[in-house]
Length: 305
Image (cartoon, rainbow, N blue to C red; front, side, top):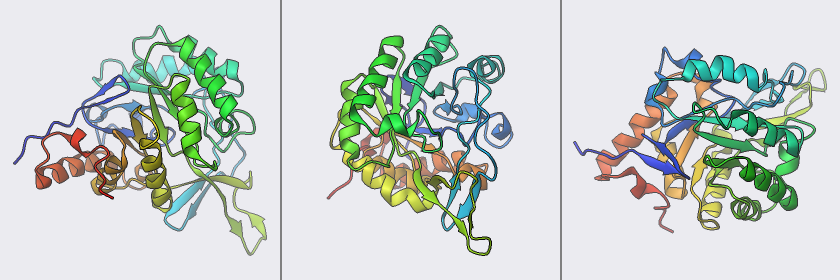
């Protein structure tokens, strides 16, 4: 058996292995800890947090679709003070880096969230979410317009020296244009993709399944789109990439790393298999042992085409 180095560096964030979780699919890990101790992960990514908390969208806000799911949660969260009191307190001392996903309705709110957390040693890095398709202001509206991307990433950069990952939307014409803008404005890494905007209809009632009509599509159905965008962005920027979009097993994760991802996030798979993160880590290691790869970083951008 080959001894594999699984450690990666994601824009200054040291991870013992390349696997974290997609924000909003794992809370802070408490509910999953009996299945996979959070210490096994390369990092925990928290659910998106705003300054004072949001109620989210009306129900129904989840719908299963072929090879995927739609959600329109709307970034429901109790606010940054509760995150610090409950989630960060629970994660404290668990030997796993914590990436806090940051959201807001305005440029100022993103900055205020970071400012409220930045002197907290329990926060290792930020994932600035400018790509959520399920809110009417903020989220994707900031992430699809180059001047807005430059402004919000620049403001957040001024607010912290910690590693800052910027989460991109696939709902754009040219994702490389947005990626370059985020890199130039101070992003240490990029994560992609967030969900694809979609909808589901109940033919019998002739009504949309989701109360908000549209929602974000995730799961295996989006994996080909995600792989394509990770590959495009890897060839367009010099910062590392956190890849996600339908990763269900170790082979999926390896494909994302070959496309150019330094690390990966497991999202929808957590809803169908609480052991998914452990299986992805073990699957990457098994692939490396089988292929004679001694350092997982050798996989990054290894696609031959």
